[in-house]
Image (cartoon, rainbow, N blue to C red; front, side, top):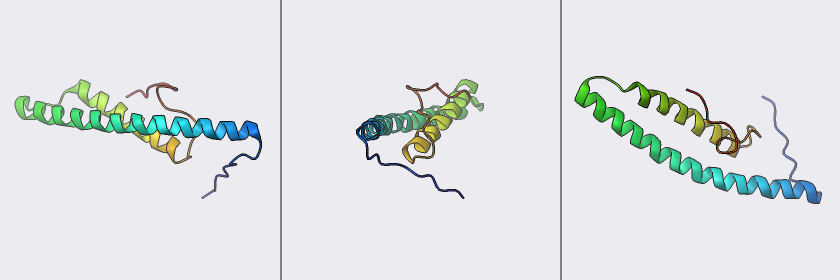
Length: 95
């Protein structure tokens, strides 16, 4: 497994980028918190739909999948496994 080297920034330009990434990390932590709440709501509605109709809702399945991928993208960014920023900076993941 290869190690990623993160340069904490000794120059002022790099230091500014580090602070910007820290700000983005705080924003994405909030987005992750909201996304987890929405995912729990989707799971509850899907369960209730299954109880009432004996079928799953395809729209909820698709949205749940894309929301799960979105959460994974955020966690990869927060743990420095990628520099690609998720939605709302990047694109919403397709299902």
